[in-house]
Amino acid sequence: MDEIGKEINDLKKKINAVIVAHNYQRPEVQDIADFVGDSLELSRKCTEVDAEVIVFCGVHFMAESAAILNPQKTVLLSVGDAGCPMADMISGDQLREWKAKYPDATVVCYINSTAEVKAESDYCCTSANAVKLVESIPANDILFVPDKNLGHYVSTKTDKNIILYPGCCPPHNRVTPKQVTLARKNYPTAEVVVHPECVPEVVAIADAVLSTSQMLRFVKESKSDTFIIGTEQELLYRMHKENPGKTFYVLSSSLICPNMKKTTLASVVKAMELKRNVVTVPEDIRIKAKQSLDRMLAVV
Ligand code: 13P
Ligand code: SF4
Image 1 (cartoon, rainbow, N blue to C red):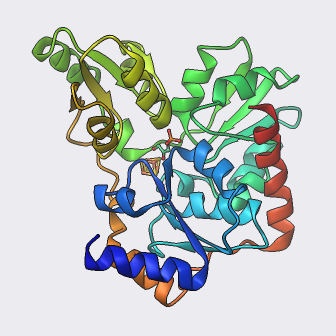
Image 2 (image 1 turned 135 degrees about the horizontal axis):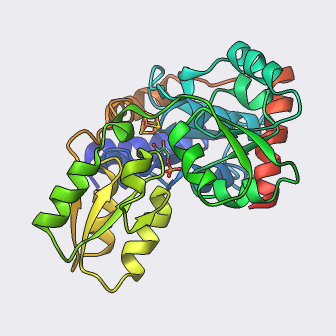
């Protein structure tokens, strides 16, 4: 193990920490993490760990979800200003205003949202369970925030009336159907696998629409040996590592999340050394936000 790896291990023992990382983190960050996964897996994992400190290598809403679910633990975000622009596209006030227009609807928020938005929602979901979660809701009218693309994808898989909020993930939203057509022309035997944060026109012509960890399972189990991947480019690191005989291409050069790239090994060391970037949620908001997360974890 190199110097910085040893330093991180020593700090982990010293402060009794566990390091969790999202699938979009830099390769070297994924390599020092105790657990790497998608948003759903990371939320679950954070409720199972014994360590006193959770070091979250990802973006703010992910660390915030860990803090909501684990009030007795200290949650450190690897880089204080690593945010998610989609999560910031709707505030608690904006959601309250929108809800007032549809007083009888049930609110489902994507986990890529702030604690305040989760607190104003009835249920939370991730890209791995959105369809199943929405199907489990007795009501017919669903306000879906903030991702219009994930919400649209869900609407094609259920008979519920899904009312969409106009948020989106900038990197995924930039992928075009033309890029899919071109990739298929260049690699005719490849399977095209995209994230549901892509626009409906891209989703409609993909072979599979999956969360990041579902993609990892899909490419492992598939008989194909070439894949075009429509999500943040760093997912290809795990794909290559776990499937040495298979070939992966990223669908578009726009698929880079600058916020996910902010975390480096040096920032992980600093966050642990100084116990900085502690993520906390006011108790009244935390309790309400936890309800929508708990409802998700109970259903799927
Ligand atoms: P996953 O839950 O599929 O890992 O996605 C998280 C995310 O931020 C996608 O942009
Ligand atoms: Fe947010 Fe998109 Fe980055 Fe995911 S990839 S964290 S949705 S900006």
